[in-house]
Amino acid sequence: MVWPMLRPATVLIVDDLASSREVLYEILLGEGYELLMAEGGAQALTMAREYTPDLVLLDMMMPDVDGLTVCRELRADPRTAKVPVIFVTALEDRSARLSGIAAGCDDFVSKPFDRIELRLRVRTVVGLNRYRLLHDEQLRFERLFTLSPNGLLIVDGQGMVRLANPAIASLVGLASPNDLAGHSLPAMLTLEDQARCVEWLVAAVEQRQSATHLGAYLTRRDGARLPVILDAGWFEWAGEPALQVIVRDMTDRRRAELLEEDRRRLVFDLHDDIAQTATAVYRQLEQLGRHYHPRRPTARASLERAHDLTRRLMRDTRRLLAGLRPAALDDLGLAAALRQHAADLRADGLRVDLHETIGTERPPAPIETALFRIAQEALNNVRKHAGTGHAVVQLTREGLCLRLTIEDNGPGLPSDPEPGPAGAHLGLRAMHERAALLGGTLIITSAPGVGTRIVAEVPLPHTDEQVI
Image (cartoon, rainbow, N blue to C red; front, side, top):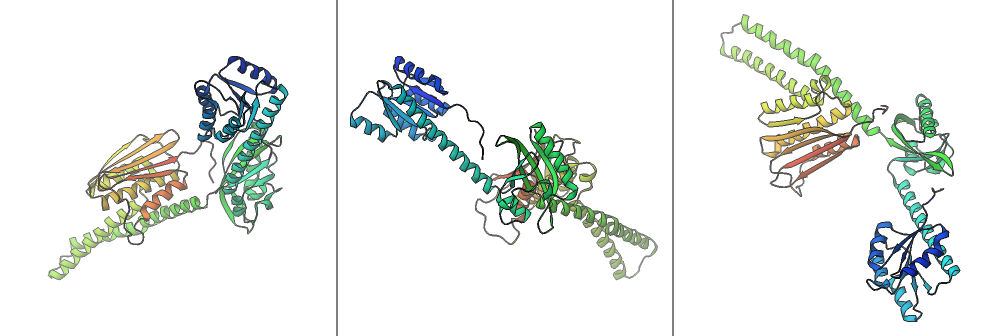
């Protein structure tokens, strides 16, 4: 990999004598370094921690904090532990040099200075340090690139793959990321998405900027289609324009969306068939009761029982419909659906205070659904387990996020809950998964005796996001 140009190397000159600092400055002035100067050990430590220089030229004998102490403190601080140190000293005895080595220095330069020797030693140490930094940076990059759970690609200006990570190879169905080298990114997508991907890549390269949220379908080697979201960032690779592309598998999110579509269709079917039929039966029973007055007590009891069962069927159907998909969520939006749900819970004895600031704003349907389901599950837990008759719900927009908060003053969740029946904690897990599928977070804060606070944050999409 070709790395971008680095900043000039920084050399920190430390000496309590101004004349010595000036001589060192003059010797190194034309070498292309950024030169900093400190008048003593204490100032040197402060500047080293602030600037993290590529080299410290350090006098051993200083009145405030001596060079050995400065070197030891630099080595003890993780921020400066690897910064090279060259001792500049007039001491020639063996014990002084051994003390310097023990303190962690990298080299020595003797006073008076040999200008050529000083330049060469500084150049060598700085070069080795820069190589180490580049090597460490490359190792970090390779580790992040290899271990990323998302697919990562580096493509050239024409969309040809130059580097791929194991995650994208797995998404495509290949054994090794090396098998993707030289392939075209657009050709990895379905025919319907290839032209859009080419335009998206060309625009990012020509404008030298990031390109976000291209929804497409990836074609696996076995012919299966995989819903993905592509994000790209422009940079230079070997002096040529290139893009780093992140490929996120949206299969789980798409499954959740399809499940919600199934819920919506089920609601319509129940409303149009079961609920209407139950209403019709109830009206027929009412008419039967007005025209037919049975004399036998058992017959009258049977008729009244039929009335009660039909009323219960209608009530339970309405509750089931509201639980599956409240009409207000589709018709009026998230805030209205939460108000309706709060009113229904108040009728069941749970006081819910709702504070919202989004009004009639309509975020995308998947976000509305996810936040409503989280609120629904959390309030259901309060009603069943919290032992309190009060909950507070807040819905606000925080910059580019929607935040939902549900609080109660119940007994709280146990810090180490006992193993319960199967599915006992599935509700909490489902809330986490709903937020995560939309790139959001869910934090539960609770302790025995202090209640529970659930905060869900979901990012809002960019205005130019293309939806799959």
